[in-house]
Image (cartoon, rainbow over all chains, first blue to last red; front, side, top):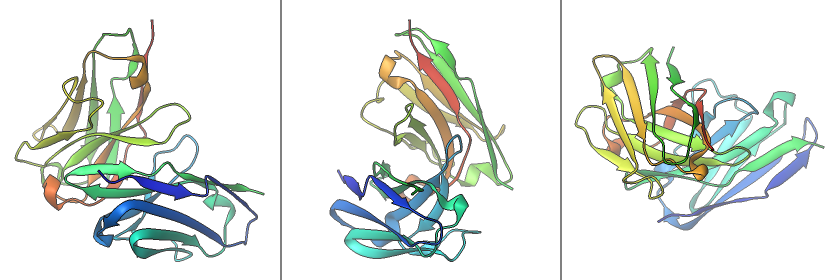
Length: 108
Length: 123
């Protein structure tokens, strides 16, 4: 069973700064099956990135994903006020869904 | 526009049962696998169960296996989750979500999510 670890747990940044979020898998995974979601308080999660690096429909290009094997990264190039939220990575394998514990990006 | 609207949550005593529903619209329901994902208060996301689009295949997370049952009615564009033998640790918002493929083996991501319905298990 794949276990996903995210770091840091909380990232305190100011609008305009760059955010770099990490997701590490307990064993090598196929990039095709790695995704990132954003969740704001009181809202449903929203798909941001699929296939490790492809943006979902309507997602601004300040969001980018990269990585392979066991190490994946979500980067927000310049934080906008609406970007502050919790971000989860997710793996799909053996018809099962696994989420990381999340990284909270809050306003410094 | 894809819309997913959950209902059926509420307060239930330990050992009790509930049936959650998710009404889907804006896409051809039978051609997509669907999932339930829950989120305990103040906690992260936890996958619960998935069902394929049209061949009846299902899968469950270990904590709910043998207690929960996922099903769907493609004629009514509705997804269900039957929750039995409920425990305090099942307290959570339950979201339904649309998978990206028809079969469980060809899906990859949860492309659309509903707002969720709150299940509270307490005496």
